[in-house]
Length: 227
Image 1 (cartoon, helix red, strand yellow):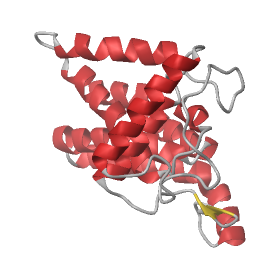
Image 2 (cartoon, helix red, strand yellow):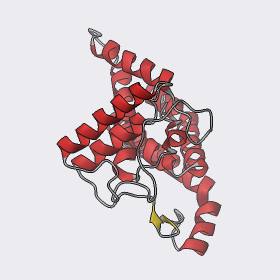
Image 3 (tube, rainbow, N blue to C red):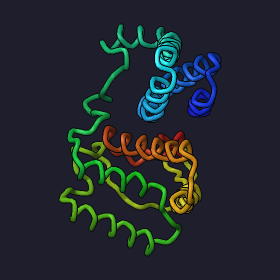
């Protein structure tokens, strides 16, 4: 999806619009978090197309959205028949997937705790130090570290040892590379606009994920598209 968003910005080839729609459709069909990660990129390409190509750009946006809907139409129909919503259930039993509050504090808490899933080390003392630091930040923002309104029921946040299980394996190396690349981007004298916009879309996608979805200790698997 992102690859063809960038190509579509550079070229008026209708194939790229169709491919963007296919990327969007397959992304959201694969996992509903695709809606969250795709939203900033779709906003970027939509504003860009309308600004630069006007009516033709609007037609390309319609093609993108229509293609994505066609790919998901059967899934939407079955979801609506079973759950009363084309997007499927919003709960797992009595447990909601979304946060109960949407504030600066709740979003900050989820940003920190989601990043915290990727900073675990083999050393107990280091993990304990990191966890205490995160707890202090929660004291500052006035929110409990395991607030029931933003935390999956029955779970608690901990900085844990590196794991190999698919539900809990973190991405520490990727996180370090991201941390290094951000200041490199900022110190460039004349960074390409598309590079900067791409960075903004990624950051906004992650923040939107943290704003909307209740924290879970196995979220690292849902971060894979972001990484």
